[in-house]
Image (tube, rainbow, N blue to C red; front, side, top):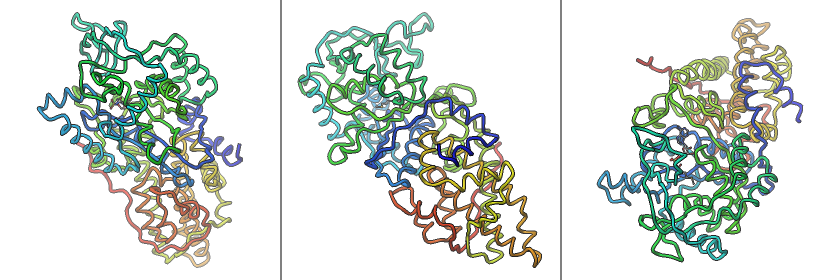
Length: 551
Ligand code: MSP
């Protein structure tokens, strides 16, 4: 363990409870990749509606990891997209009396707009109706068929279009005397038709061996245990084609049938690597708990059969409720990302989601907590620090930020010691924290740094010292040091507080810091991090406007 990190772990702080919760997960990460390639994926979202906050959350995990990885010198591929070969999408298009492709184009566009508005730094946006995807899926199907892993059989069973999956009677619940899907509260369709099946059962032993050899494959660990238990219980082959629905990708060995979401969707992760990006595979998947079996069992088996490497890691997220209630269209409480951004700003929404909710656990989204964290932590904490330091320094014609060791050594009490620890971090240590303790931890650590810097300012009172000739020099030193602290804290926050980081770049007015970008791989962040003395041309500005009181 690196010394500085050990110290940070031991500091008493308000967020220790949340940190301890994090330690309970087996978050041992992966990625000390030698090749310096980093590939991360969101699930592809159904295109029958606009994205909600659950989708935004998994996309943000990918975005934040991608941005950090670029700063650490990785060549990053971050893919997202829409899942289109779906029966429920077709049904919705028909309900809206729209041509299916027009309907899909419209939603693909809306998804893109949402992610662009949220400033997501994705590199690939895949649509599963694209020719590239269709051709690749057919190629994999043929390989799998040639290996003898696809066979024809008769399927009789219940299919829930909402879930896009087959159900057993034991999966259903009773409502008004009928057996319905517990999630969609609708009776599944009874289907009897000829289908092609994938020999999942053949891969049971290989899967168990793979899990045993890769104990960090799924996070959090309790999800991994669930998957292993399920596989050991015994796997059944699954149907990969439909005879009656025609919207999907024709099987190369039987054009009368199409494959659809249950088989083709997963292959999107490999489609995006075809045609030049093959070396990015294997990647890391971020996905929700409802599709964990699909990703952790079906997908590796499909890859084993077709002869590809298995994913590096799967990060499984929980489900959100909203103010204690299930999020649903019928309750009208769906949280829409664009509305959040409009009302609170992108960065406040991001900060709240990762400060308040632990990756992997179910969590409750609360507007009140979002507002409170924006006002008291960001506005009064970070905004206030940046604005007080830059204004006071500007007023006193300070044109330098400096890591004054005398000031550094003044951070002695418990809270300020945390600042010393943060300032002692190296980029390698920050990367290790991100890998092992994840985004929540880095964000919480950053916020403790903000609190510590505010305490330092309060204790040292540079504005008082500047007023008398005997202590003016000392006051100037404090401000130069605080400018250095603002720079370090801003650099840590760059991958998650993207808008405010851009503002701080302007406020500080330093050429190198202005070049730092989390959108492309570059050395500037590391160089800026190492600057112990730097020029500033200050342009103080307000970071956060106060929110209008909610009615
Ligand atoms: N199309 C499939 C995924 C195929 S990936 C090869 C799908 N799409 S989805 O649009 O229904 O869901 C996408 C993601 O959103 C899933 O990871 C799901 O877990 C997540 N969420 C859906 N509702 C959610 C909440 N209420 N809270 C948090 N995330 C949830 O599944």
